Image 1 (cartoon, helix red, strand yellow):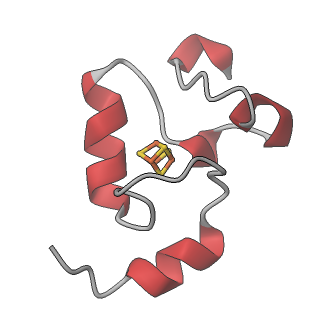
Image 2 (cartoon, helix red, strand yellow):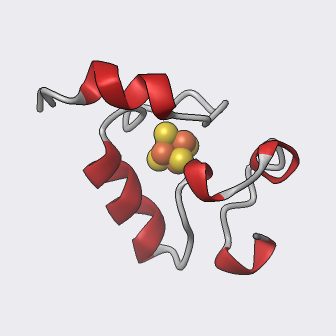
Length: 58
Ligand code: SF4
C-alpha cells in the first residue's frame, strides 16, 4: 500500500532496522503494538540500537 506521508515520515524515523514497514507509521505501530512493543521512535539512540522494542526497555 502506498502512503502519501512515507517520504515525510522517513525524515523523522530513527529506526536503523530495515523492514518493509519503515516510513509507514500506522503499520509500524500496529506491528509492534500487537507484540506489546513500541516503535523505534520511542527509544533513544542507544536503546534503539538494541532492537529490543519491548515497552519496559524505554
Ligand atoms: S520500528 Fe519496527 S516496524 Fe518500524 S520501521 Fe523499525 S523495525 Fe520496522
